[in-house]
Length: 352
Image 1: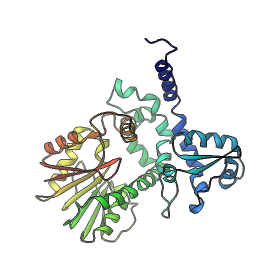
Image 2: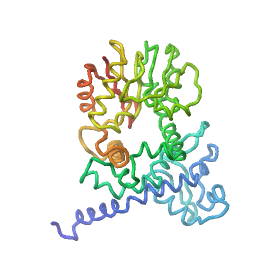
Image 3: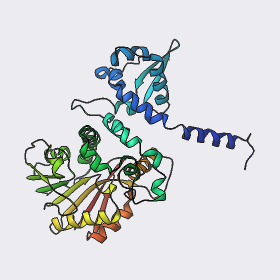
């Protein structure tokens, strides 16, 4: 063990102190989203640096400006806000990161994704993460709440609505990027979206590719029952572990990552049965790098992996490209390609 006075030892203790207090960061982020701080600073595109005291009346009838400033300072250190010191007064504007929290014309932002991650039922699971190591047959969420996350969400309308809004807030920007950088929908006439929820992704794909004559939005019956009518889209309820509607191509986003290897192979086999020869399964999933490093991308992917383990399935997980390729081969897909159109999601194309 090094002497306590060495620079490396001092730095090590500083890092572990930061990690021990890291909960302050997501909780501060959760707080500013709840308070609509990003919209208040953005102010219809002005993004003029303003103080906490100036922000406060835009978000609350009364409150504590000093405590708001404390939240702004910690999030400034993580790149959410710019801090401007003017005549001794701290003022704040949005960085590119902070702008992801601004509500767009469709009422969407990454804010719902932040709130969805920090609901009470989810927070109860985090002190039990070690139980996923002790006994992986039951995820921490179920231990904390008495049932699995998917069943729990369906019984809690407010949670389910927030989940749908969170997924839309994340999905819409990703689908826009995917449609700009991926052309695998060419020649498809009947497209099935597995786990399509309200049908937002399918609607955007059909708008970009009008040669697709029919879209099938496939999800649980209770989910598609709430999906809005969409031109050229049929909402179909069912269970992907039993069967999947037929199509020239099957699309899914962030579906495979929450299931075990054997469950993924079952989903893929059902996709294989539903596709013609040469048909494609197009899956957009978080894909882990082979090597661990300190980049934002690697950290975001590994953090998401622990989230899956804690909330959805103890043996559900993010996977590497090679792990996905081997699962697909076992399910009958001999051809595999990966397209990096986004820093978080990768487009995985499996062809029959």
